[in-house]
Image 1 (spheres, rainbow, N blue to C red):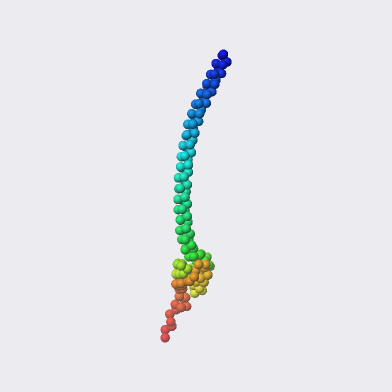
Image 2: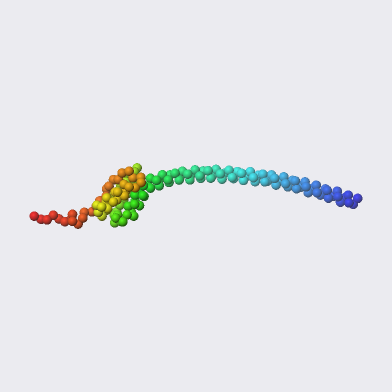
Length: 148
């Protein structure tokens, strides 16, 4: 009898613990489900934010690319003129609009002027060169005319 009584208590305790565990499990399951829903909501918000950021980056990239492309021709011309030894004592300004490169400033000789115009004309993206460069008068040209 004592054994039967002990077994009954053991069964009761086991069933009671199982019931409490089930309630706890249900509570955990409900909490887990709520947490999962919150995580899903946060994930959706993050995804929307990333999509907006992606669009902003794309738009910015396209604007930057257009800007770089339009100034790229002027930069290429400037680079070619800047690194040429025959033009290192020159003061050159380059402006490019729709394939037309305008050169202003001064060069030391007529040969340097021709070199600057040719380098500019041979640059990819330049369709026409407007030469507004000046060449200082040579000392021979500055001599006053002899008096009669």
